[in-house]
Length: 400
Ligand SMILES: Cc1cc2nc3c(=O)[nH]c(=O)nc-3n(C[C@H](O)[C@H](O)[C@H](O)COP(=O)(O)OP(=O)(O)OC[C@H]3O[C@@H](n4cnc5c(N)ncnc54)[C@H](O)[C@@H]3O)c2cc1C
Image (cartoon, rainbow, N blue to C red):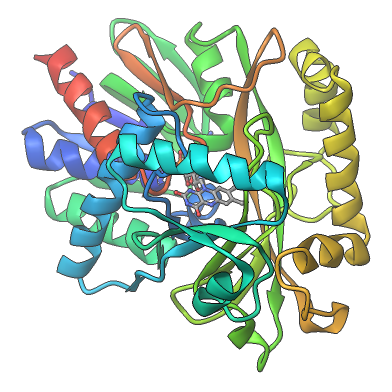
């Protein structure tokens, strides 16, 4: 007999949300296997901590559905558990006519997605919302909020534990094979389970690969680095100030976020990480870097002149502070180099297919008695309650 009905690999927000929903919705014996001794050590604890209400995602997409529903549910959850939640709203500013036109498209998407948003015209009106922001128009969305993502993950885990889920911390999954049940070899021994949920974030493609799932994809790690405003300068951003997103580019430019603890972070940029957990721009994991550089999908992604230009700009922002500051000053011109100090970094697990296309929607792939979260890109934190619920429901359906 298997040790568990369901084993979940990964103690980030997706793994822990799945565990909580399984504990609530079934009588299965469930465990979470996490290689670190702390939950949320990677993407789920190294992000902007923003609830993205979904004003900008394509209507009808899974991203739009998860983020709108996720924002509402997460606010209820955090309030119920008395966890940090600051609903500051977000101001998306336009600095030229092209961006101004894009704001109208964003407003259309917000309306279709059922997200409150309004267009603000004129520099003076923009400054009524954010006195130091520069822009001749903006989209204001009042529902955006800041949270403490690590505390949230710990609360999910506490709920899961109350429901009987067991946590194996400091257990790195080294291999998985299916022999009528899953045999999971970890750094501290072997476990068996009838069903497997792979929520291993930056290593989800590797685990999936062991079971012959998702071979047409590879995760390319993109580091996002933050600066923060030095004490005394935080007042230049009261809420969140974002640039108008370019629909052709995968990542939003550098922006300002007032976190739930009152700090204002600026960033992130998006630069190829030289390893899946290489958080500093001097850290290199040669094996993982070689894997990325020998992936044809990566070179196809960089193949377009536009993407190569963006990659070069982002790299410059990583190594040259003045470039980062210059991007930050397009939104808030009063900010000077000395007002920003280096803060933390996170790494996005961006799924890229073999044609070089970035997968933008959440992706859940099925294997033999297993589900694999291959793409939980931003806003994966915002989406984690509905996403985890969906994974739990599919697991229950398969086992029953
Ligand atoms: C810079 C940055 C900013 C972001 N900002 C936001 C934001 O503001 N709002 C938002 O909604 N989303 C944001 N996101 C996205 C969000 O953080 C992620 O979508 C989400 O955290 C993904 O959660 P996860 O559980 O899938 O992955 P993770 O949090 O990475 O969890 C995966 C876990 O699996 C474990 N693991 C991996 N391999 C193994 C193994 N072999 N054995 C055992 N355990 C293993 C890891 O240690 C890790 O704890 C941001 C992401 C980044 C990187």
